[in-house]
Length: 145
Image 1 (cartoon, rainbow, N blue to C red):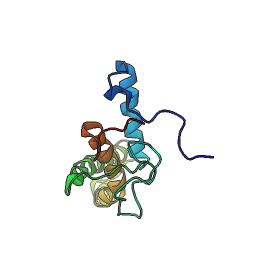
Image 2 (cartoon, rainbow, N blue to C red):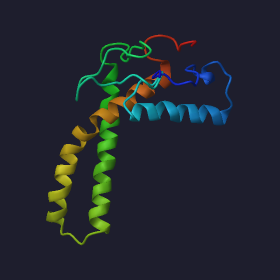
Image 3 (cartoon, rainbow, N blue to C red):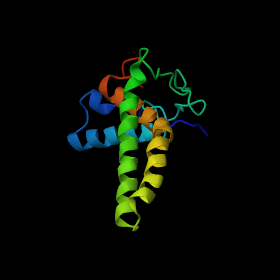
Image 4 (cartoon, rainbow, N blue to C red):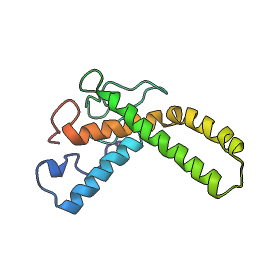
């Protein structure tokens, strides 16, 4: 059985073939591929070969993940936003669900704030790769497959 999906891999909205609702679902699908740490183009190839190192190209469709050096720097800002949301969620939970003193809250929130960027790194990198793909494609023009 083939690993490839039976659905077409062409981004129909790039050719103007999809309506507004279809475009929305196509964008959500591409972002979901990034959250699953898969290739935003085909959804089959993996982004990471180890905990912190990414592949240069997709194993399934040969799409290049980084167009130029430093392009993945935007993932730092995505990581910052995700870490901030994680810390804010932890603060709201400790404030509303538990009756903790401020020093007790700090003993929880400081480790969450410090470990948040480490925990969100891969997710941020996958989302940023998907955002780059949505904005301008990765290395090649969008495939006609």
